Length: 249
Ligand code: ADP
Ligand code: MG
Image (tube, rainbow, N blue to C red):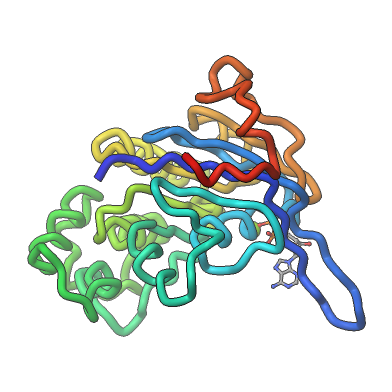
């Protein structure tokens, strides 16, 4: 699958935290990632990175604004259409989230276990383990692996549906610097091989610097976007302005 374009416009997310208190986690955020681009979403803890990834992945609902991923208007998806969309997006988390009772191979198969697939599940999972350098660990239990190895398994799992977009939330946050660098090497190599778009949330400038572009968030707002106006596809077009409806394309 080729990489999805990601277009976020005027996106806001407000949490009602009880007692009438509203917490604005995202405030009128707009950004764009081209097909096959690796975008870093940088910002300190609490700046809204995870919230933004959750919204892009349709794991939570926006309060305002729009998100388009490939051909899909994510913010307009009905509940019944969200699961099929989510299967076109891969997720990698800081804490790996492997299932401890399953072997490495079965962890990679887990996301597709309930579904019919156009490929042989075991064969595909084995290929992915090979691609992340863990072919020989297929029948090992996750607890026997190092943190870096567990994150490799999580990356293989995220790719089982051949996603057009990979969302990685602090993928190196639980790893030492050298291992974190290896994980970024792997993510960026897989991006190039598969053509998928990648968005990596991180508070680590060294991790962000590995990506093609950096968008910085602070208190739920974009404070910098190093896509110069001329580099941004469609830049300068009226209809790309935040908050405007652009359903026609
Ligand atoms: P980051 O990933 O950059 O650390 P988050 O997206 O997790 O930031 O959080 C952004 C803000 O939204 C923070 O102030 C956080 O406390 C708040 N927040 C996140 N999730 C929730 C939630 N489910 N309910 C209430 N507030 C939340
Ligand atoms: Mg976070």
